[in-house]
Length: 254
Ligand SMILES: C[S@@+](CC[C@H](N)C(=O)[O-])C[C@H]1O[C@@H](n2cnc3c(N)ncnc32)[C@H](O)[C@@H]1O
Image (cartoon, rainbow, N blue to C red; front, side, top):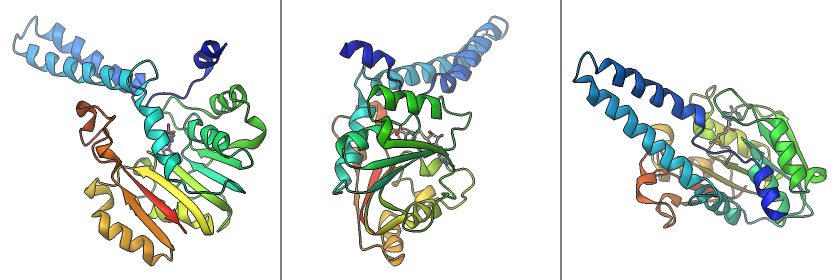
Protein backbone atom coordinates (compact mmCIF):
# COMPACT_ATOMS: atom_id res chain seq x y z
CA UNK A 1 0.00 0.00 0.00
CA UNK A 2 2.76 2.41 1.01
CA UNK A 3 4.65 1.42 -2.16
CA UNK A 4 1.65 2.21 -4.40
CA UNK A 5 1.34 5.61 -2.73
CA UNK A 6 5.05 6.35 -3.26
CA UNK A 7 4.73 5.46 -6.94
CA UNK A 8 1.74 7.76 -7.51
CA UNK A 9 3.27 10.75 -5.77
CA UNK A 10 5.17 13.00 -8.14
CA UNK A 11 7.24 15.71 -6.51
CA UNK A 12 9.43 16.09 -9.58
CA UNK A 13 13.19 16.35 -9.86
CA UNK A 14 15.35 19.49 -9.93
CA UNK A 15 17.21 17.96 -12.86
CA UNK A 16 14.31 17.65 -15.27
CA UNK A 17 14.49 15.22 -18.18
CA UNK A 18 14.03 18.11 -20.63
CA UNK A 19 17.13 19.77 -19.14
CA UNK A 20 19.18 16.72 -20.20
CA UNK A 21 17.86 16.15 -23.74
CA UNK A 22 19.95 18.89 -25.45
CA UNK A 23 23.22 17.38 -24.15
CA UNK A 24 22.29 13.89 -25.38
CA UNK A 25 21.19 15.31 -28.72
CA UNK A 26 24.39 17.37 -29.19
CA UNK A 27 26.53 14.39 -28.11
CA UNK A 28 24.98 12.23 -30.84
CA UNK A 29 25.28 15.02 -33.46
CA UNK A 30 29.00 15.55 -32.75
CA UNK A 31 29.62 11.81 -32.58
CA UNK A 32 28.19 11.48 -36.09
CA UNK A 33 30.17 14.53 -37.30
CA UNK A 34 33.36 13.00 -35.87
CA UNK A 35 33.04 10.25 -38.49
CA UNK A 36 34.00 12.99 -40.98
CA UNK A 37 36.13 15.25 -38.72
CA UNK A 38 37.75 13.02 -36.13
CA UNK A 39 38.68 15.76 -33.63
CA UNK A 40 35.01 16.51 -33.03
CA UNK A 41 35.00 13.34 -30.93
CA UNK A 42 36.33 15.58 -28.11
CA UNK A 43 33.24 17.81 -28.34
CA UNK A 44 30.98 14.74 -28.41
CA UNK A 45 32.76 13.39 -25.29
CA UNK A 46 32.23 16.73 -23.53
CA UNK A 47 28.45 16.61 -24.10
CA UNK A 48 28.25 12.97 -22.97
CA UNK A 49 30.20 13.78 -19.77
CA UNK A 50 27.80 16.65 -18.98
CA UNK A 51 24.87 14.31 -19.70
CA UNK A 52 26.34 11.64 -17.39
CA UNK A 53 26.74 14.27 -14.65
CA UNK A 54 23.07 15.29 -14.91
CA UNK A 55 21.91 11.65 -14.95
CA UNK A 56 23.94 11.10 -11.76
CA UNK A 57 22.53 14.29 -10.15
CA UNK A 58 18.95 13.31 -11.08
CA UNK A 59 19.47 9.91 -9.48
CA UNK A 60 20.97 11.37 -6.28
CA UNK A 61 18.09 13.86 -5.96
CA UNK A 62 15.45 11.13 -6.32
CA UNK A 63 14.09 8.84 -3.54
CA UNK A 64 15.59 5.84 -5.40
CA UNK A 65 19.07 7.38 -5.03
CA UNK A 66 20.33 9.64 -2.27
CA UNK A 67 16.92 11.29 -1.70
CA UNK A 68 18.80 14.60 -1.50
CA UNK A 69 15.72 16.67 -2.42
CA UNK A 70 13.78 15.36 0.59
CA UNK A 71 16.74 16.07 2.87
CA UNK A 72 17.08 19.61 1.52
CA UNK A 73 13.34 20.26 1.93
CA UNK A 74 13.67 19.11 5.54
CA UNK A 75 16.34 21.78 6.15
CA UNK A 76 13.88 24.53 5.18
CA UNK A 77 11.05 23.09 7.26
CA UNK A 78 13.36 22.73 10.27
CA UNK A 79 14.28 26.42 10.07
CA UNK A 80 10.69 27.65 10.12
CA UNK A 81 10.21 28.21 13.81
CA UNK A 82 6.42 28.60 13.62
CA UNK A 83 3.52 27.80 15.96
CA UNK A 84 1.50 26.36 13.05
CA UNK A 85 -1.47 28.61 13.83
CA UNK A 86 -2.81 30.47 10.82
CA UNK A 87 -2.06 30.66 7.11
CA UNK A 88 1.28 29.98 5.37
CA UNK A 89 2.49 30.49 1.81
CA UNK A 90 4.93 28.34 -0.20
CA UNK A 91 6.36 30.57 -2.94
CA UNK A 92 7.27 28.70 -6.15
CA UNK A 93 5.77 25.45 -4.94
CA UNK A 94 6.63 23.34 -8.03
CA UNK A 95 4.68 20.10 -7.62
CA UNK A 96 3.61 21.13 -4.12
CA UNK A 97 6.09 19.17 -2.05
CA UNK A 98 6.80 21.82 0.61
CA UNK A 99 3.16 22.94 0.65
CA UNK A 100 2.14 19.37 1.51
CA UNK A 101 4.98 18.75 4.00
CA UNK A 102 4.23 22.04 5.77
CA UNK A 103 0.56 21.15 6.16
CA UNK A 104 1.52 17.71 7.49
CA UNK A 105 3.91 19.26 10.01
CA UNK A 106 1.28 21.78 11.13
CA UNK A 107 -2.11 20.01 11.05
CA UNK A 108 -4.03 23.13 12.12
CA UNK A 109 -2.54 25.39 9.47
CA UNK A 110 -3.89 26.43 6.11
CA UNK A 111 -1.23 26.51 3.35
CA UNK A 112 -1.29 28.17 -0.07
CA UNK A 113 1.21 27.16 -2.74
CA UNK A 114 1.82 29.57 -5.60
CA UNK A 115 3.84 29.06 -8.77
CA UNK A 116 3.81 30.44 -12.32
CA UNK A 117 4.23 26.86 -13.69
CA UNK A 118 6.16 27.92 -16.79
CA UNK A 119 7.34 25.59 -19.55
CA UNK A 120 10.88 25.17 -18.20
CA UNK A 121 9.78 22.81 -15.43
CA UNK A 122 7.72 19.62 -15.45
CA UNK A 123 5.49 20.94 -12.66
CA UNK A 124 1.78 21.84 -12.69
CA UNK A 125 -1.15 22.86 -10.52
CA UNK A 126 -2.93 19.59 -11.40
CA UNK A 127 -0.04 17.47 -10.10
CA UNK A 128 0.09 19.63 -6.91
CA UNK A 129 -3.58 18.86 -6.26
CA UNK A 130 -3.11 15.17 -7.00
CA UNK A 131 -0.16 14.97 -4.59
CA UNK A 132 -2.16 16.80 -1.90
CA UNK A 133 -5.08 14.37 -2.38
CA UNK A 134 -2.79 11.32 -2.07
CA UNK A 135 -1.23 12.82 1.06
CA UNK A 136 -4.75 13.55 2.39
CA UNK A 137 -4.22 17.26 2.99
CA UNK A 138 -6.30 18.62 0.10
CA UNK A 139 -8.84 20.28 2.40
CA UNK A 140 -6.15 22.38 4.07
CA UNK A 141 -4.03 23.38 1.10
CA UNK A 142 -4.73 25.35 -2.06
CA UNK A 143 -2.71 26.15 -5.15
CA UNK A 144 -2.75 29.30 -7.22
CA UNK A 145 -0.96 30.53 -10.35
CA UNK A 146 1.00 33.69 -9.55
CA UNK A 147 4.45 35.21 -9.91
CA UNK A 148 6.83 35.56 -6.97
CA UNK A 149 7.74 39.00 -8.34
CA UNK A 150 4.23 40.36 -7.67
CA UNK A 151 2.29 38.26 -5.21
CA UNK A 152 -1.49 38.76 -5.49
CA UNK A 153 -1.97 39.24 -1.73
CA UNK A 154 -2.18 42.34 0.42
CA UNK A 155 0.60 43.29 2.84
CA UNK A 156 0.91 41.06 5.95
CA UNK A 157 -1.58 38.46 4.67
CA UNK A 158 0.30 35.36 5.91
CA UNK A 159 1.51 34.13 9.28
CA UNK A 160 4.46 32.27 7.73
CA UNK A 161 6.26 31.94 4.39
CA UNK A 162 8.62 29.38 2.89
CA UNK A 163 10.33 29.00 -0.45
CA UNK A 164 12.90 26.65 -1.90
CA UNK A 165 15.12 27.28 -4.96
CA UNK A 166 12.87 29.82 -6.59
CA UNK A 167 14.00 33.43 -6.10
CA UNK A 168 17.08 33.24 -8.40
CA UNK A 169 14.78 32.01 -11.19
CA UNK A 170 12.30 34.86 -11.12
CA UNK A 171 12.96 36.23 -14.59
CA UNK A 172 10.92 39.42 -14.37
CA UNK A 173 12.82 40.69 -11.32
CA UNK A 174 16.22 42.07 -12.29
CA UNK A 175 17.31 42.51 -8.69
CA UNK A 176 16.64 39.23 -6.89
CA UNK A 177 16.76 40.96 -3.50
CA UNK A 178 13.46 42.54 -4.55
CA UNK A 179 11.95 39.04 -4.71
CA UNK A 180 12.93 38.46 -1.07
CA UNK A 181 11.38 41.84 -0.20
CA UNK A 182 8.17 40.90 -2.01
CA UNK A 183 8.01 37.58 -0.12
CA UNK A 184 8.46 39.38 3.20
CA UNK A 185 5.84 41.98 2.27
CA UNK A 186 3.06 39.40 2.52
CA UNK A 187 4.22 38.12 5.97
CA UNK A 188 2.61 39.59 9.09
CA UNK A 189 4.75 41.54 11.54
CA UNK A 190 6.01 38.88 13.96
CA UNK A 191 5.37 36.14 11.36
CA UNK A 192 8.00 33.51 10.49
CA UNK A 193 9.90 32.82 7.29
CA UNK A 194 12.48 30.37 5.88
CA UNK A 195 13.75 30.78 2.32
CA UNK A 196 16.37 28.58 0.70
CA UNK A 197 18.11 29.66 -2.48
CA UNK A 198 21.54 30.30 -4.02
CA UNK A 199 22.20 33.04 -1.46
CA UNK A 200 25.98 32.51 -1.59
CA UNK A 201 25.97 33.33 -5.32
CA UNK A 202 27.51 36.81 -5.09
CA UNK A 203 26.63 37.90 -8.61
CA UNK A 204 22.95 37.31 -7.77
CA UNK A 205 22.64 38.47 -4.15
CA UNK A 206 25.95 40.22 -3.31
CA UNK A 207 27.71 39.55 0.01
CA UNK A 208 25.59 37.68 2.59
CA UNK A 209 26.42 40.16 5.38
CA UNK A 210 25.31 43.04 3.19
CA UNK A 211 22.12 41.17 2.26
CA UNK A 212 21.33 40.55 5.95
CA UNK A 213 21.97 44.23 6.73
CA UNK A 214 19.58 45.33 3.99
CA UNK A 215 16.86 42.90 5.13
CA UNK A 216 17.12 44.30 8.68
CA UNK A 217 16.75 47.80 7.24
CA UNK A 218 13.40 46.70 5.79
CA UNK A 219 12.17 46.45 9.41
CA UNK A 220 12.54 42.70 9.84
CA UNK A 221 12.84 41.88 13.55
CA UNK A 222 15.32 39.01 13.19
CA UNK A 223 17.02 37.38 10.21
CA UNK A 224 19.71 34.70 10.30
CA UNK A 225 21.62 32.82 7.62
CA UNK A 226 22.49 29.11 7.53
CA UNK A 227 25.05 27.91 4.98
CA UNK A 228 23.35 24.69 3.91
CA UNK A 229 25.83 24.04 1.08
CA UNK A 230 28.05 22.40 3.73
CA UNK A 231 25.42 19.80 4.72
CA UNK A 232 27.29 16.50 4.97
CA UNK A 233 24.60 14.50 3.14
CA UNK A 234 25.35 16.40 -0.11
CA UNK A 235 27.87 14.40 -2.18
CA UNK A 236 30.97 16.36 -3.33
CA UNK A 237 30.06 16.28 -7.07
CA UNK A 238 26.77 18.03 -6.27
CA UNK A 239 28.59 20.85 -4.47
CA UNK A 240 29.47 22.58 -7.74
CA UNK A 241 28.37 26.26 -7.67
CA UNK A 242 25.59 25.82 -10.25
CA UNK A 243 24.18 22.86 -8.28
CA UNK A 244 24.14 22.96 -4.47
CA UNK A 245 27.49 24.62 -3.76
CA UNK A 246 26.05 28.07 -3.03
CA UNK A 247 22.82 27.29 -1.19
CA UNK A 248 21.76 28.74 2.11
CA UNK A 249 18.68 29.59 4.16
CA UNK A 250 17.48 33.01 5.26
CA UNK A 251 15.17 32.54 8.22
CA UNK A 252 13.71 34.47 11.09
CA UNK A 253 10.86 36.64 12.33
CA UNK A 254 9.50 39.61 10.43
C1 LIG B 1 13.77 24.33 -8.67
S1 LIG B 1 12.03 24.47 -8.79
C2 LIG B 1 11.63 24.34 -7.06
C3 LIG B 1 10.25 23.85 -6.81
C4 LIG B 1 9.90 23.59 -5.35
N1 LIG B 1 9.98 24.79 -4.56
C5 LIG B 1 10.78 22.51 -4.77
O1 LIG B 1 11.47 22.76 -3.80
O2 LIG B 1 10.75 21.38 -5.27
C6 LIG B 1 11.80 26.18 -9.15
C7 LIG B 1 10.35 26.59 -9.18
O3 LIG B 1 10.27 28.00 -9.28
C8 LIG B 1 9.15 28.31 -10.06
N2 LIG B 1 9.26 29.70 -10.53
C9 LIG B 1 10.19 30.24 -11.35
N3 LIG B 1 9.92 31.55 -11.55
C10 LIG B 1 8.80 31.83 -10.83
C11 LIG B 1 8.04 33.01 -10.65
N4 LIG B 1 8.34 34.17 -11.25
N5 LIG B 1 6.96 32.94 -9.84
C12 LIG B 1 6.61 31.80 -9.23
N6 LIG B 1 7.30 30.64 -9.37
C13 LIG B 1 8.37 30.66 -10.18
C14 LIG B 1 9.22 27.27 -11.18
O4 LIG B 1 7.97 27.15 -11.86
C15 LIG B 1 9.57 26.03 -10.37
O5 LIG B 1 8.41 25.39 -9.90
